[in-house]
Image 1: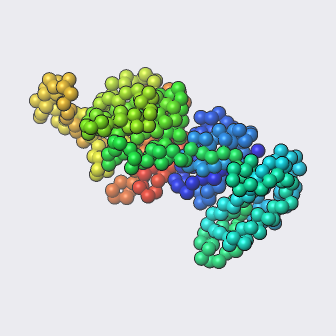
Image 2 (image 1 turned 30 degrees about the vertical axis):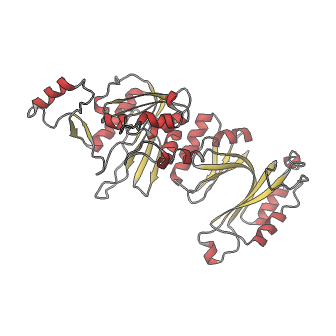
Image 3 (image 1 turned 60 degrees about the vertical axis):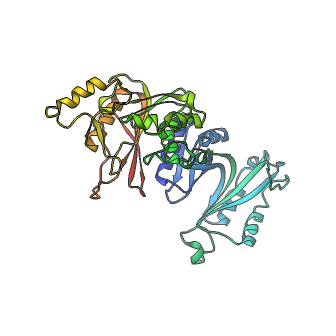
Length: 396
């Protein structure tokens, strides 16, 4: 059976990666029949409407899914396709209340033309009551128009579809987790929508353990916990975990969303000096946004030259157990930390686990930065957020 996924107008390069990940999470067989980044519609093949509803129920980028009944380059072609359908297709909806809606992309019709379009489907064997509020069935006419069709006065779309509404997604949770409403954030807190998308692509789900080695204020662990995973995190600066006082800390973010039961713990460490033993495969997923750029210069635990500053090391040994102790840090290469992240993932991910991380697409001289690779990890997807020149990479 074929279905139409209607996507939101955001993060186009993430759409397929998210929907393919959700097919794996929900254990449904998904085949993408047709998709283009410049269209909000994706045609997919699934086994049943029940599988369709499961596929999008926790999607952030999808808005809804609809069973596809016909399509055409013109309205006449669409009607021809619908007339050729077996009559049994409509039998189960024959006495159901229903309504028709029109969903146009890059174009529009005057109200008179919209009514004329809806009335053109009067030949369908739908004998139930037309009901505008909470009908049993909603039939949607999707049409795709050329770019700038309104100012150019284009009168007809280039593609038209008819679908029956199946289910909505979870896109509304983006507002729930909006950073503007969150109790504790910093300048580097990941956007809530992108954190939720990252958690989906990383396959966060109940019964899984996820870890963020650059946890900060907890954007990624909160998103993973929302989808049922047990969340852990660490940060080189324990102050970002402990927070600002007055109850504003990483833990308070979990409390705000009633997710405290899904927070494993958060601890001070950096990935080059991690207490997690190499070879212990404990994480189902690792999600992170490593520090880069001017705002968050990359540092790791240590001193530049131990031989020249032995007293710094000695002081650290004496005061390490003090809750107020701030360990010394030294500059570190961003490319080195990427290699360290991949090696850490290869050592600690379970089989089939995913590492999902963000990185810049170019340096300050606008030179392209290639995505890192590891012989024991397979690249699943690379998604680009062009506005911020960031690249999202998922490995397994």
